[in-house]
Amino acid sequence: MDPNQKIAQLLLRLVATGLILIGGLVLGLELLEHRLRQVELSWVKVGFHAVLVLAGLILLALSARLAARFAGGDDEDADEPPP
Image (cartoon, rainbow, N blue to C red; front, side, top):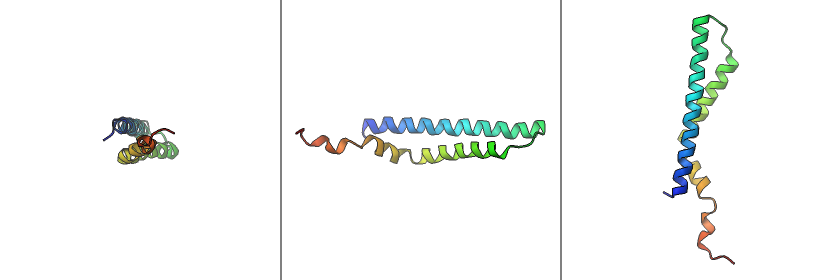
């Protein structure tokens, strides 16, 4: 695996993990607040944070393919001598 591809995959995985952690934490806090304080649950907030978690999971699953696409974009012309 190309070193640039490894770096891109690491960065994508870090972003994906951050999305999952932040979305899951805030989603859990929203549900906890609803349960403890008996406040009405905002389905817009719950949906938004669930979408963040889902986006993080999808990004985590596709990180290898996306890293290959990002890192391998200009390597095809590297073998040809400059004009």
